[in-house]
Image (cartoon, rainbow, N blue to C red):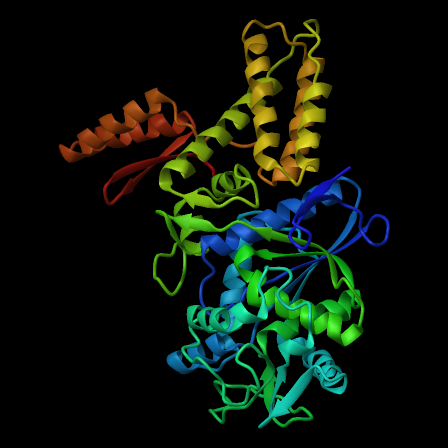
Length: 474
Ligand SMILES: [Zn+2]
């Protein structure tokens, strides 16, 4: 029995999808106007693990993610770089996917580009006007928030507070404009945005009953999810900071358009990744991009670090935490290498089932990956001495490996059959000796040492600041 924390009810609830074992899951995707940062990636890693786990537990998961490939930020980026608007989302989405691949993000069933769903978006906007929830003004269409009485329920807002927070949210999103004169109320939000008359190269537009324009941000999500899932579905995810106004707007749109409640059964939100005690934000400039992360760090260790924190908790990223995660991951890999070397037939029986139960109980409890990993480390501490004393049987070792295999499938980081990244001390010593010889100009001797190191399976690479040792053939 899986329990999930539902932001809508603010309670942990038994996970019961609307239709048996079928799960329709939607997660807010990126706006590819520049490189995704590691805070964005934390969110997608969190949902990748959730989707993996649900599948492992026998659910059929349709995991849908939108891609906001048209937005003010994209228009501005295209104008700034003087390139066709489409090049911006294409470039940064490709980068996002390539970083995602290195991080083993494989859970998404479909990525849906907003601009591929313009007719569905126009259809939903038209329905909202017809039902009296939206109004047109000068070619733009707005959702009239006061017509939807549940507005603010998810994030605990009320209309009195809204005026202030809408202005704040818009300012934080960098819109730099307080009020749109077309709006009846400052907290109304745009569903369809009239063309501003900029060059089509930077600002694309589509024909609509209200003239040429483009979709607002919130409407694309509900138009896309309705296209694939209908007006109601099981799980909606996203970063916690999207609760307001984005997710409130989604609820208002879809519940008004269909008249069916609730739009989403389980709202799931992730905690934010912070850097040096400041929230990572592109506008503040304190950003590590995903691309930088996978190029300068071990992507497996970064994924492992994310899994070492509960998805709802904030993750205060630091190099120290990263190094700790890398070393913990190496402990698991080291352990699996030792397990695989166990050959003796006789030995003490080792009860793996207790650990397996605890591991799954932790994951069932709102996808508690840190507790699940703690179970794995408890097992390692219990089994390691038996391997040392040669009292663990090959049969038990195999059973443990099969448990670790489950862990690997859930966490999504290879634990088994990996090459050791820990460099033996004697190899490091030889490489240092070689470095000294090079400094002294003794090239032949240095090369001979390099060959000796290579014979032992390691490659020495010279770098700007000295050298680097990597397992050969990796
Ligand atoms: Zn969204």
